[in-house]
Amino acid sequence: MKLTQLWTWFKNRLFFKSFRFKSNFIVMTALDMVYYLILFGLIILTGRYVAPNFAFLMQAGTIVQNLQNIPFEQLGVMADQVKSNFLSFIFLAVLLLLIWLASYSFFKGMIWAKLFEKKFTYKHFLKLCMMNVIVTAVFLLLLSLTAKLIKDENQAIFSLLVIIPLGIHLFHTSNAVMLLESGLKQYFRKFMRVSFRKIVYFIIPFLIMAVMLLLVVIVVTYFQFLPQKVYFVVYLLFFIAYSCWAKQYIGHIVKKMF
Figure 1 (cartoon, rainbow, N blue to C red):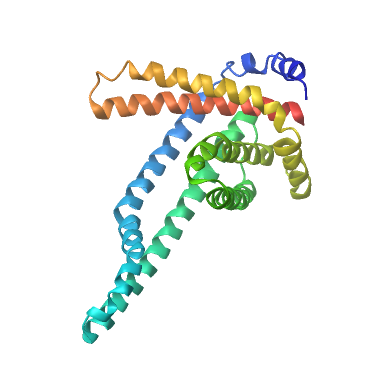
Figure 2 (figure 1 turned 90 degrees about the vertical axis):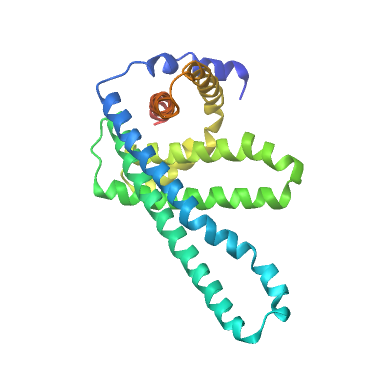
């Protein structure tokens, strides 16, 4: 793919068309706001309940090494404690992950439905949950491979420049294609076509979205004089507006490929 061809793709005015907001944009923004409020709540719950259990389990190796210095009557108590922390960690981690998956699939699905002016059904929700599980597994697999195959000093940069953008790309295209294609067999075929075979067409748009995000961050810094909680709300509103615009831009690109 030549650079001139990519530029021609950009000049089809999809970028400018993405700023033609409809009344649905307000609804999209409200839905995204609810999603991020739920997400922040899940992050708080993770830090309060999941992280302590995880930290305890990470120290299990040290505990095992010192077992010979612990009286026998305390071993049973410690074993029960380790088991309890492990079960609590698994249960809470899976529960919060499922809540995130359901909220992401529902609210983001509703946003894509509003964007494409489609009806969001229960079947759409279940299909999005299934696909988001697959994409999440692929994303975690890529992170795992990065940790094993990439040198430690290069892992952060590689993840930031390659893995995370690819994960965002797959989440967005998989959800967008799902709302445009009802048949499951046709969906996977078009998803592979849009997400991988046509990925080169997303290069310039993603670069533009990165620049736009940088501009949003710069603009929001001028509101730092506000109280911390107010500043957080302003930051969130700017980011959500940007997120919905980016989805609209991506949506125009995906529709162009159908």
